[in-house]
Length: 310
Image (tube, rainbow, N blue to C red; front, side, top):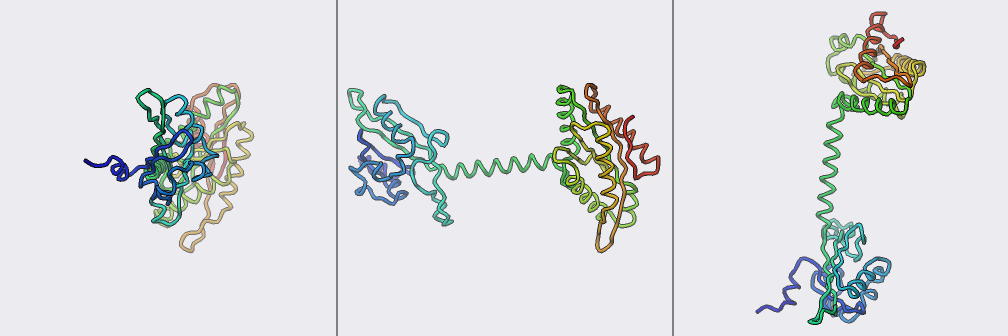
């Protein structure tokens, strides 16, 4: 029959047995390898002498609690952040010595009378699990970002900007505050594609989108609505304020020198604005329809203009 202590030495988890004075009674091979302190050097010594840093953690108090009430204790990152000063296995390979992410269980070892004579400490290295969870979380966030971002312009796509509009409208209706939206369209964009190719058109769209993102206020939002058309959301902005903002934007784009394969290009945009008054209850579709109507007027009036809902 195998010695049960030998079996504990072959486990891929840390196993220690502690007496009521917090002295080490048993120390398995896993703990010896990760602490780089052999069992002969720790037996009979206090955990706090072996690892002085434990005094600043919850572990000693939790150990004494187990001896007092005879109930097991579970320690994770929320309750006690990595009590033992160990390093993750992979950190030795990478040589960056990353702290080991740990889960620790303290269980009472009772005699036949039900008295807790010793405590069993089990240490689990969950570094790989934490790392994998973070990788999955990062991937999820990246996928969510991609699903809400227009591939070409790298600004919010149609669904994203419409969701933002619906949210802003709810807030502004509830708080009875004004807001405006604008529809912006690049003038003669088909001619750009015809004269210089679709790759040039794509570059123009991307550059225009990035310019708008930087020219607008921090709390404004712009998204690609479709083709060469963009939807701009101007929170807490009256009709007069939105016209001033959008006209400055139009002039800035007009003055900007685009460059494609050594050729310098300039373009203009037309903008239609629809403003919601403070107490007005208006739905997103109607606001967009109004902005589209004003955009149509701007184009029919010669383009390179800013028109607003009267």
